[in-house]
Length: 296
Image (cartoon, rainbow, N blue to C red; front, side, top):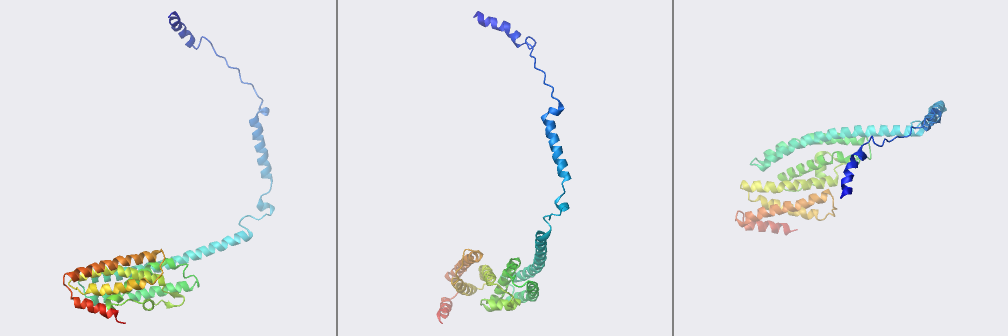
């Protein structure tokens, strides 16, 4: 116990920094010419002085990266890219005008879902076919300036073309009850030239877009008392769906649109079933229509 009592008496003396002063040795004085830093600086000075005294590539007569064959190649690349950019801009300007006309045509066709007469709706929509034909002729003139490059720039106007085909096909069906064929669509748009025509896939996608309007058309027509329209639309969609089944479609955009046609057909079948079980149409009419379809 005495040892523990003695330790606190000596603890202040141990902790006192002035009791045992600590001395450090003085740093050695190194001459400047012997310092490693000075030797490094002198080495860099000698290197930069020697590099500044040597002539550059241009002064020595050697080729720079932008002279000769390399410069000529990239100059041609720049010219090609500028021409491609200007050409795409011209195509997009015409495509925007086509889109503007299709919006007006689509707005006129939407009136068919109301109680407007079909002839009046078609008359307003047909008035936009002329401007569409002019715009597609302008596109054809632009593409003729670069022969063989149709599919290189095709993506710049294919969406507008698909929309136009869908509207023309819907108008043709309202007027005749039949499908707008590919040659007929080309004739309406003036795309019957060998260097600028209507792409088959664009035509098929447009037909799939047109089928999306038919279920809405059927429902609205039944609402206004036209109970025979579900039968007509059902027969048309059934034939159209069977025709598409003949195609070997891959897993692409066209395949997805064709899958959507199945649901359009199902919705029309449901409307036709509801109308039939309520006795709003005669069973003889539906049987007679099916019999006429089975005849060659």
